[in-house]
Structure formats: C-alpha cells, structure tokens
Image (cartoon, rainbow, N blue to C red; front, side, top):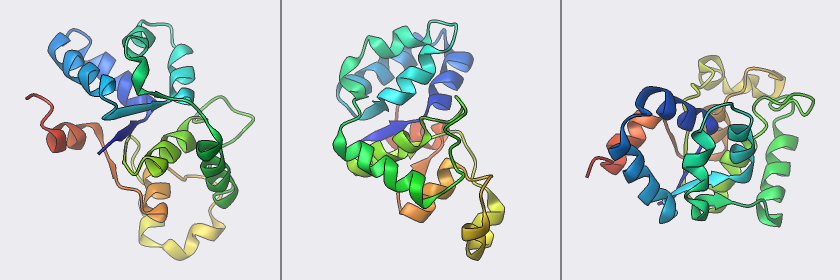
Amino acid sequence: MPYSFDTDVFIELKRSSSDNDRLWEILGRRMDSRDILVSREVVVEIQRGTDTLIDRIRTHPRCIVETDNTIQKYVTKLVNKYLGWVNPASTRNLADPYVIAVAGVHHGYVVTLERANQFLLEHPEQWANQTTGLKIPNICEMEHIPHLNSVDYLIATGTFT
C-alpha cells in the first residue's frame, strides 16, 4: 500500500530526527520501493526551504511522482469541488491537492500532520458554506481516501523493523 507524504511530514521528521540515520535509512528504502510517494509539488515546496532536506528526497528519485494527466485531472476535480481550499495566489499549501491526488490515483493513504477541522466533521451539512478552514484530512474524509499522521504511519508500517 503506497503512502503519499505531505510536506509537513518531511519537515517534522527533519526537525525531530535529523540525526536519526537509522530512521532515514528505513524511510529511504521505502521511498526507493515506492511505498512512500512524493508528489513533484511537495518536492517544490521542500526546495523552497533553506536546509538540506531536499537532498534526502533527491537521493530517492523513484518516490517522486510527476504530475501526469491523471494526477492533474484529479487535482482539478478537487480544487473545483472544494472552492476556497487552496489559494492559487499564495505559495502556501499548493501541494495539498497533489498529495491527495497521488494517494487517490495510486489507491494509497495520505500521511500528513494537518488536523481535520472538527467543526466540519461534526457538521457535514456546512461543507457547502465553508470557504476556509478546509484541511487535508477533511478532504480525505469527503473523498474516502484513508489518511494517517506520521506517528500512526510509523505504527501501522512497523517502521523500525
């Protein structure tokens, strides 16, 4: 089962375990085997950073998913369906629909540190009125795409084996 990683997961892993070579070795093997997938747009977001995180991704090019017609159509569907979710005039969160599209196209999971907007989970009738506050887990719920945070991913996959 492939896992589409959001930018924030890599940033947090770098911040909290940059010196944990064993963890990065395991994740690297999973990237090489395409168990972990990274959209091209996540790579672009990571490149904007000023640290060496991009080098960890570039050493595993097989995990990078280029934006083909199938991915782009999926992204277009998401952005048109959830108006206001992604602001095209901003440089923030532009990779979010691609993270979900990669998981959707490859029948996988999304891994993100974002937390769902609880109000929307409890009041689904308000989705049509909501133009802000949508998070990746909210969209995943509506699109029936499984999602995990990074800790749940590590537990689910037995990363330390």
